[in-house]
Figure (cartoon, rainbow, N blue to C red):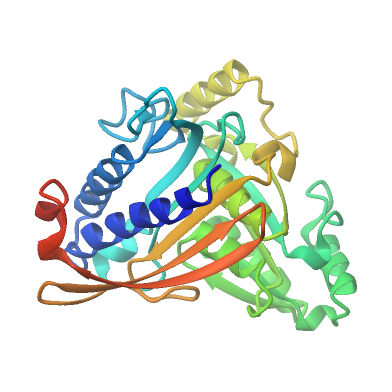
Length: 338
């Protein structure tokens, strides 16, 4: 992919972040997501790409825009063909209630770069470059923690494990804490925390948890770009949320969709299965300030954003601080920004 495209993709996440920030603290997750999706789609469609959404807002019958399979960009004869994985707002709840760590995210790769995962649960284990090639999701989590501690020349009690703070993880969190292992229980934000596990300046050594499969694929793209490692496996809703008539019905649908895509529920997926090319571009713009990015700052018509832009080929990491005058945005984006 052309290097110049990277900055264009940064503009896409900036647009989603600025639009969604208008809904900060207003209590509606749906409105937060809607304006971000509209802004992201408008920005993508201005680009000279022939893109396809492979991870998005859902299937075509579930989402009006940025649905899986949607064609994006100018789509000219000379346009670069790309697959795109998007999460217009990672942390819609956090934006709706004014909490930290919400970001607008996308990952871009050549055609066929990303696993086309169904929208279901995924168990994820993520580490940085020093433990690359050493983790094994078939082993107990404690065994993997010991492996990472050895690789990083740390005492096991100095390892910091980031785990999604959900009822399904209460037992493992308590078990680790009882062993003296440090736990960072984060409320939301799989992708942002995946980045923490892969950057040297972070205290996080491991990210573990059962979250969304779409977010898992986006995480895989940035983990690959940062030189880290990841393993995952798809989980049926009934195995995560418990057995009920509704959960069983959803689980049967999930299993069918996996079979259609040639995926096996419960089979360990390695990083190459999730994102199998180094030529990826990852962009994330802060919506609310958090562990990796400053959030949107707005005064009248002037908006400041911070974006993390990573190119997988070169492993280059850029932090882009931008100042936007919304009065000079184009006529299609302006209504979403004003």
